[in-house]
Length: 131
Image 1 (cartoon, rainbow, N blue to C red):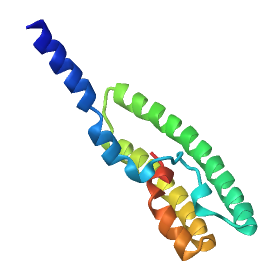
Image 2 (cartoon, rainbow, N blue to C red):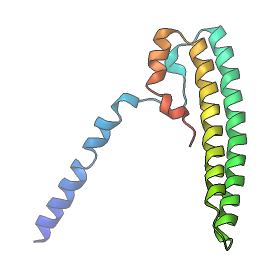
Image 3 (tube, helix red, strand yellow):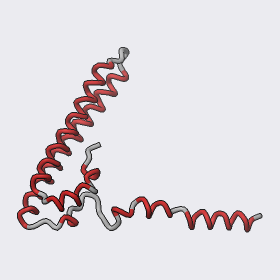
Image 4 (tube, rainbow, N blue to C red):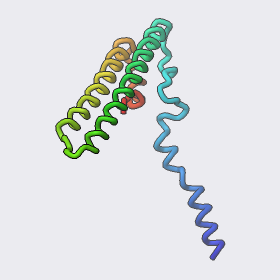
């Protein structure tokens, strides 16, 4: 009985990560938010560096806003009367802010990249999504 359990355990471990390789094959060897695969020229590198820096600054501001919104939601939840409209307003503010930052970033990137580079970038666009 022990040998059967050990055999099942070994087989389970050996076969456990088969789906992992299949699922992540498109991003093999790719680091998150790494743009080296685009083979940018000097002019593009300079422009992209500025765009990414702006994106990071806006993302930092967004995270501060998100923190404030979470605090406000907590206060609303702890109050005696639950204000559904105010929660909705806070959620909308947060969503609109995230969408605006993403839209500006993607529009600027689209303007700089060639069609071939855009095709490559599209595979990894989800990395730049704000959550």
